[in-house]
Amino acid sequence: MRLTFISIILFFSFFTAFSQNPWIQPIVQSVKADTIFTTIADLQAMDRVTASNSPVPHDYLKQKLEAYGMDTVFYHYYKPNTPPNVVGIRYGTQNPAEYWLMGGHYDAVLAGAGADDNASGTAAVLEMGRVLQDYEIKKSLILVLFSGEETGLWGSQAFADSAVNVINMAGMINLDMIAYSHNLEDSSVSACWKYFAGDLMQDFLTGVSLYVPGLKVDQDSTSGIINASDHASFWNHMIPALFLIENSDRWGGSFNPWYHQLSDTTGKGANSPWLAENITRAAITALLINIEPFSTISVPDEDLTASSMTFFPNPATTHITLQLPFNSEPVNITLFDRQGRMVINENDLRHGAQLDISFFPKGVYVVQLVSGKQAATGKLVKL
Ligand SMILES: [Zn+2]
Image (cartoon, rainbow, N blue to C red; front, side, top):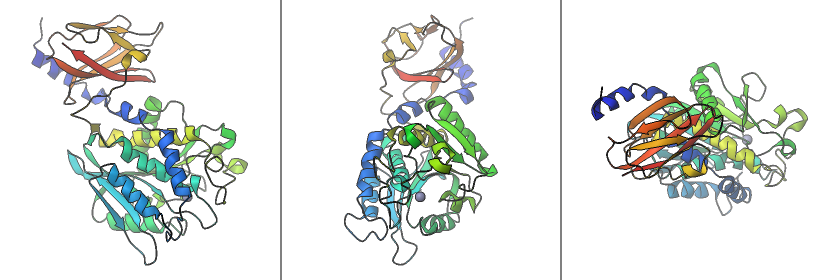
């Protein structure tokens, strides 16, 4: 039997639910500790209590969000003589009324430089804006930097209380203190959640296992710390929110010794670029799973030939052949066309397996290979 091109596409579309979004991996890979730590260094030099000296932190944050192409960026003033929240919105192309949020507080305590607490989480939120700037998203994204956290969650409470009446907030991730590792050895994050955030927690765990495999996750729904930051303002409205914080051996004597100190600076309070990068990647992945990024003008440019999982030839005309490491687990291969439509999805393939692409139109395709916890994305040129 020879299937026509159309019927093959219909056949494979049954597998869509199991496919992975090919854009997530390249976006997550482009999250870099360098940009995160540059932002931390910039912020730790600013007055983030009264914001009365120049440079003004909320101006800095607004300019960054604007530079990253957010559709709208504004100050949210909520209390006299208090610096504003800074809010950036990117609208989804398919379901713009569904909003996903990533947030962190940018204020600091009077006694501290606030690198880990919480220039680190602020930098992670900005990083999301940066890595997403060349992509479209199907659901809407709000990046929000809160003021007034250290004085009692003022900014997040004012934001959540007013936004809940206006928009549908489907989920929120709050990052507060993500750049300190005890003895530089702890590679864990605490993911604090409540029962109504179970789906987002599951997306977070899926994202970590696929895209941030070195990060250990410690689920926390009981400790004394779980209400201690801005996500709690969203929990008050039963909005599914996660709180991410460096695990530092689950605190005790290993809690950041520079917390709320003058020496909460890069190299001391914020000492682990690795941890900051990986917690940021994990948060971003969980949100990307939900807002569904895509691009119609570019394809991931990761070089698959540099991966241990690859295929040949490329460019190809009739067939491609899988090339896998010796003793590799079976792989799942997915091909997408430039419009993001899945055209092939096949599971349990071994080294040497061949795929017939002779009936594909000429052009560029995105190829994603997944094997166990390994994933690789690249492009195939069909001649
Ligand atoms: Zn904090």
